[in-house]
Image 1 (cartoon, rainbow, N blue to C red):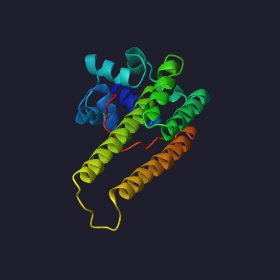
Image 2: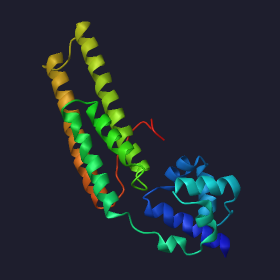
Image 3: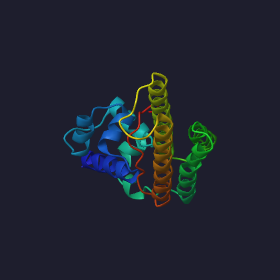
Image 4: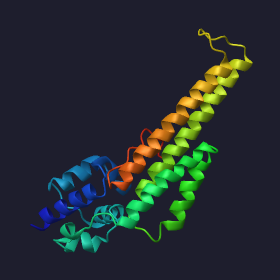
Length: 203
């Protein structure tokens, strides 16, 4: 019974935090198979495994292991968290002024509020990882196009490299702008944000 309660609590807490089994395994530094076996009741989380899961789910090992009703009492994200996460998403729009601001502003907001608000680290890291990846992609595209222009490589289209650079950068800016607004709505609605693909610089 205790093992059943534990696996159900872990699964319930993971779902409430909007995490997939893969994400929980990554955050807890466990294999995906281990998380699957624990949630299916095939094995019991003990010792270091229990501590890793508790840390990833932002609870103590004692709360996770000893309180059979803990998963029922777990609350939905606080309104403060919901509003803050929506604001954090919108702060990434500062990339419009300068690409690196899309990283710096959300990072500053996260670091200044992480002690006051619970369960925001994972979402903040995903936003920042996406913006870093986007900035790197912008830089790579610029280097490729400028290098091709400097080497006098001709395009097969009727556009020159200056026009191509403008089109590519404009498209990437528009994509990031729409993506941020969409994820801001998801965050305010307490739904899982979709910042993918992104390189996991912050884990």
